[in-house]
Length: 605
Image 1 (cartoon, helix red, strand yellow):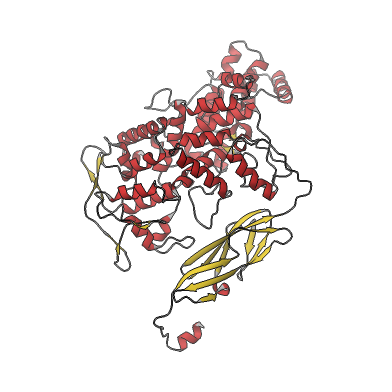
Image 2 (cartoon, rainbow, N blue to C red):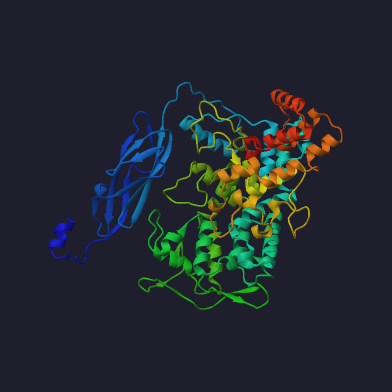
């Protein structure tokens, strides 16, 4: 075809109909049961003159999960394992997708009928039962109290807190603990760290005075449980001095129009729109027109330095239009789903965008935030990555995501309500151990997903266990690493090695928890850990100096580090090591080092 067209002189035929839509068959929802794990897709193009054409042989296909299913160039899908996969279909500038589910009968599978605490468990169980993944039983009390402390307030429980909880016979003790933790000041302090990452609080970008004021505002908003729609509106519509009105720093860290567009889209819409700045998004429906239409909401923001330190005035101007960089077309303010929004009577276009963003016409706002909350508690999002919503990255449990979002809206955008709902579920409280019938489950939440503590949590935990917390120069003596307003305020190599971000991006991927040789070396023979273990004022050396028995010292160390006493075998081995050692302090140091290097200590589980 191409050769013949060139040979004919590359004539361009006028008045040819445009392709306006592609239709994929079968549509989303098809369930394929083993052994019938193949499905031929067909793609139909719809044209502006009403005609249709089969373009299966011209379409480009891609699977969202190649471990579940692959697809050939001709559109033949082949399943490999239980699960779901979305198939992306591209033709010209158009994109469509279809979701396929692959099931099979598993030998010996029996549904355990565990109790359901709320709608979270109902939706999770529906998916697990369909795919024949058996849910794990509840975690024990010691595991639960450690997990929920780390997730809600960012720190390990004390020995006393663990003992009181484990020995409490009340059947509602977990619900009461959740409520206490959600209302402790450490909750807002810890979650301000997470929002500090998203909003890029850093001294380099906005200066130390603004960092402290911005951080206090975020922490205060979380502490008051400010409704999330108000929180978003406060950031997006902020004006005035960055020192007097801290939310205005949103437009300091987003230093220009395009940065503001991309940050708002990623944080509040879960969309990585950056690709559409230069060309239509290759894996999503976003176009350049969409990008610059959204940019029209932010084009009139002016940033004006006052000359007083790092203070900047954020101003909204009355003029300033956006033109398409390729064709010069005037771009009218545009929002997903809603299309062009009227702004003629608006004194500040950002207010129009914020009203649409948090309003009922926007299907993304609530879904993105509940997915973020779920990911922080469960170790992965229902949509994963949890700030990358697109047709080709479908949710692992769409009914659950929809239910959480609707509940969030009904509650008045109450974040604590959603956290409480998830925390009370059997799904969150499940054991992390896998069984014969869920060992292959990687994303449907049949068991709790262990993950390494964050850099700040880990350093705080080492300090708590050894009795020698990190002292941060220039900060209050009792400040924890999880309470730091910005990374530069504590230049600690350990934090950088374990994934503390520089906050240069609104993408949560900047914070990493991958294993590495450098991290292993820090734990095996790093200066920070060894200095604490050799310090005469640490927990176990003080206990030994006070004349405590070896068994009591070991029990205390296990309880503070792991929230459980040593097993009989662990105690036997440790006492044997102490009994044969020439240097009792050095032997106890060996044991403490081994405990602090256990996966059970390093991970939330």
